[in-house]
Image (cartoon, rainbow, N blue to C red; front, side, top):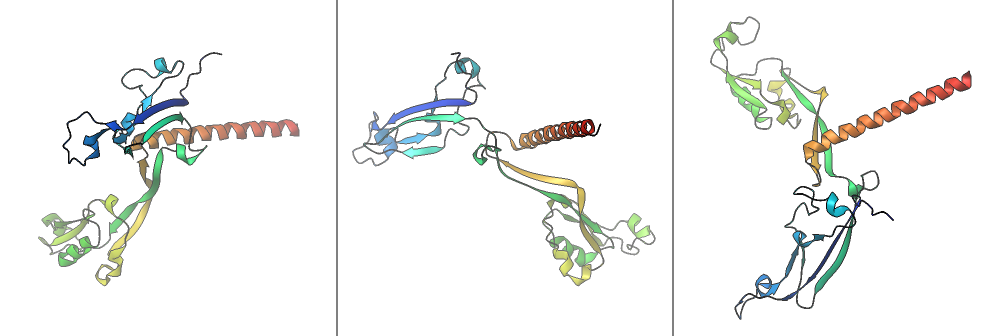
Length: 242
């Protein structure tokens, strides 16, 4: 039988046994890492054993199978204990089981939309800014150009503080400002319906930004498959009607 390309299943073996260390430990030493070798077992102690053509398939600096986080502590051994284990890594997708999903948590929200419809000046501007997370609302001075614009609401207010929207992305949509009477009719809160903000946390197999791009590719493939199936169904219907 031809050797299998085991890209879908890798074998990792490790036999670790605790024994007296070779270091010159003090008689009163109580640190197990100094008293013994292999007192602590880490992910980096797992060794990949290639099978068949895996040695050629997984080669080079970026092709070697190894733990993503080598310093994870797996076990602590004490006298008389040992680990003799063979592990099989199986490649899968989240559709088969959640354990294969590279995403830890994923969520989305719409971009907040904050519109100041009437000027908010002076101490009210400072209070208004404090109703939002830091960086959402800024404080600026009313310029001569602002004060010269008829109907702007800034007439005669040159040099006064005014509230301006700086970065609505940072808003948590607490709507705190709507609780205060002095801001009634001066601000309009909403969301931009076609601006989605995704938050994706990776388990470790992929970077978070790559996960989003790959998920879009999968969605496009599913849409193309659905389109083909609908077209095939329409052709079958036309054939039967004919």
